[in-house]
Image (cartoon, rainbow, N blue to C red; front, side):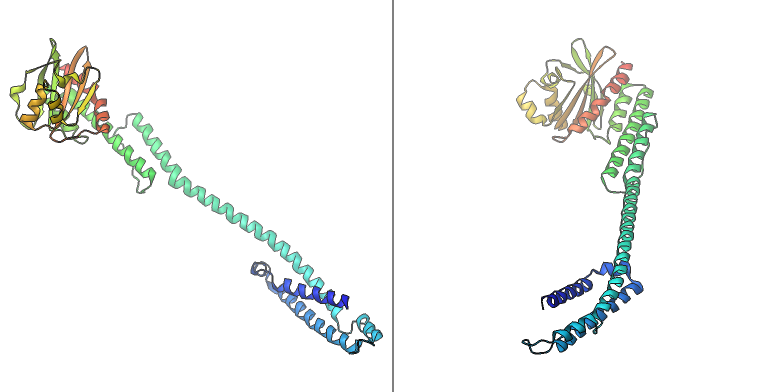
Length: 333
């Protein structure tokens, strides 16, 4: 009885394991082999049921007097065909197991190939969308270094690299503007033409209302040239003493910004030129740039009719232009 119970458990476990296999296994193997094993498993279940009913019939219903010889003969002669079917199913299952191993290896290679292909596609995409674009920007920078100013790159993306491309185009365009401005400054015959040119050329960076060019002579700064939409000829030749609070900002610095001229003049009563700009021209913000070139000193003053009109970036950009202004302006002094 214990052996019969164990046999039932083994066959039932085999049945659950066989029909509980994954769909992937069926997909990997497929074909006639699965059909053969399905038929073998179905036949094994039928033989198992025949064995149970046949053995019970041979052993009898009286547990006190079991027909052991009949039951023994039933088993030894395999009258139900169970054990022959077990051997047949075993061979089919072995074939199935071998095919499953082969299919698993094939599937592993397919997965590895798919992963490798995906990685290659990712690398190609990365190379095309990132690396090649960065290389193109780097080559363009090299061309600008070689003197191809004004070079621009086209990029239709909206990521960080497109922002880099946009910054490069702006920078390259500014380089070209600087070259144009330098060329025009040297071609101009007077300081007045030069200052008017500076006012026009820096307008893409900052649109100033008035420009003043002052030169140092005998301890005082004289207003030599004015570029403005308003006539201020009466100021030409006027002197500003170096102790004026307005100019004192440049004692230790090469550049200074006054964001609120009204507040500055209230705090510094001796800023005479500042009072004039505020009261007569409604100037609200100033930028002063000291220029030392060719042993001479000068000051370029940029004025605007709005408060806090000069950003830090604009100040830094204009400061790079200061030597260019000095070389050009002092050449005509």
